[in-house]
Image 1 (cartoon, chains in turn red, cyan):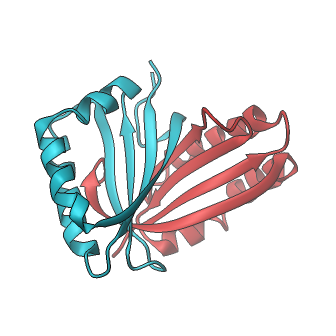
Image 2 (image 1 turned 120 degrees about the horizontal axis):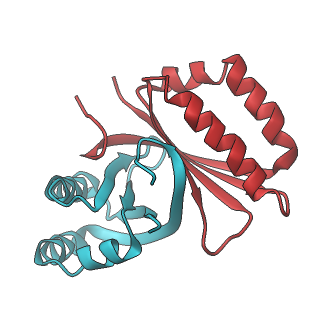
Image 3 (image 1 turned 120 degrees about the vertical axis):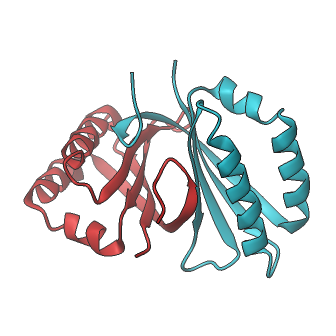
Length: 103
Length: 103
């Protein structure tokens, strides 16, 4: 089973980065209970004040897709949407390295 | 102390992705002994066959900079350079989430 990874670049509307980060951090806290969510890290940028990056790794593409259907996730998306000016995601496939378990 | 994160996008020369991945995976194995290297994950792309992404997180920018001066790292860079057509890196600052310890 191959892991699913993603770098999600959120552009917050002016002045909304921290409010958006707070919602994403809540999602990360909720993900603590979801074993298939192996990484969900919120990052800021030192050079782009309106940008947030989320580094995600899921145990499979199916696990990631399933997470998007959860009511908690849907509620967080509804709260976050008004704060977001744009989203770009880069999908990747983790194949090895330090910090995750690879079978 | 703030963590240091980076998404490094390597474009391998044609046919060299797997050889480059092998060198990066060796670097990740070596990083197992370096506590300040918290994440070093090698990723492939399902849509770009010559691309490798490395997700890195270090305990501080200084720890990352220090790692680049190590002889092991320098030797790996020398071995990898002939296989690389380009490198682009996005520097980020992890602020919270699942998968890393945040003080």
